[in-house]
Length: 613
Image: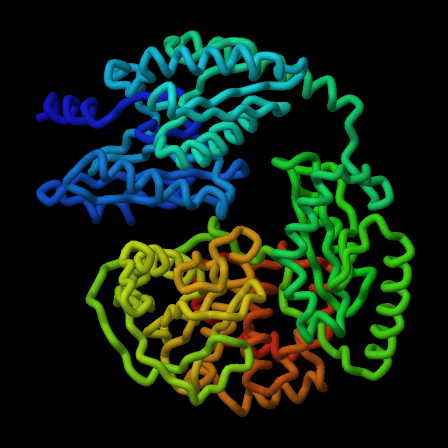
């Protein structure tokens, strides 16, 4: 039986030297450790294996910092179809999750990550002789002369015939980046010619296609050794920016990139009512088209907002410099006069608002810009089971911030049950479009929000029975629309989606937005337990709130007692169990502003699993 398994396994693989090619097992030990630690194989892959019905294939990837990851899988009678669907699904995750590649992780109940694919070199789908000749000609005529000293030039080549081929090269400071860029762009261009695969063809002035793995490894090792030496030498002179005024000017390509990010991600938020009466600043840092970072901050104090956004931006290892790129809905980079005019006007407006006594809270938007939670935070989520398709009538339809609560809809959904390690279960209903039942997409969303729910403290989860995941959001402020109705043991999520389309990918998955969405989940769960008066004493809450003398954790907490409770309890969870994520000045301010609310929560001895003090 063991021999048969090996034969089947070898028959399912073929080798490609590319950075992330279909059927290429991964080799990155750190990425493997992420999936082992999260027990993804045991919890999410193994339960789906059914050898009697077909082959189950998974592809996974991590980002370069190993703080975000993703995967896709496929189940099919045809092994080729299973590979293609899972691999292409993973590729679609690459841009959104900044993955460095997608690699084969498992086939059925066997993890193939780290396996030596040179054992099956004879199964490689090779380029034919005419394609190799064409690739060589293109390399000699157009790529070889692009090789630069102290840089790495990589060429990927895809080909069906002399009339159907495509290649892309990239020249970067390090090998991994050059391979990643060249490979992704080659795949994108080749797909227009109906070419499914791109092969690593050359590294610097050496053609490596067709060479054995040892030869390619030797070329790569020599380049990496030179790159390491170069980095060591650079470190003697390269300095990390310590002040905004030290920033090296952005080049034209970076300015264009910053403008695109501002228009796509920031401008709409900057035009909102809340942003217009506050200080919203956007800092952008950029070395080149593959190494850039940005951060924005909204607050009641311009200097504090600038300092917070700047420090968060320049803290990224991707960049050495960050610039104030926009204030409000105006780009100010490169225009000192416009910047001075906007800042002067904004400072006066904020000072007037502060003098009126309107700013009697710690943070305008609770934990905005803070990474209180991440995908790496501990979770008790264990297993997801599909139940049935279910149409639920008379469900509230909220698609914008000011939606009419009287609007209802038929909620067409896939129903799942999520199981957790502490004997807690919850139903997850994921909406699908009428006439477009995408089960795989729904299951992924159920898995994602089950994982997040498992990060919530037990005392918040135990009284919540259901989550409704909507797909018709038309309002994108980064977090979407979340709500819990009075006296219901459930809450609703209408997360922002790419392109604001039902088919678009929900954006809570993005690294920058994950924590914000998780914080809102704490807030909604707080509503659920407040409405169950056997848990929270209304009189005790009212007394604590009154004793704190009209001071609040956030501006939204001022809305009413119900929102004050949810915001205050959310703050308490973070203060007591995530305090390292909060500045010393804000920790002190929370203690000064809401001491009686905090004391009330401290005395309730909540079960906080899986959070640790």
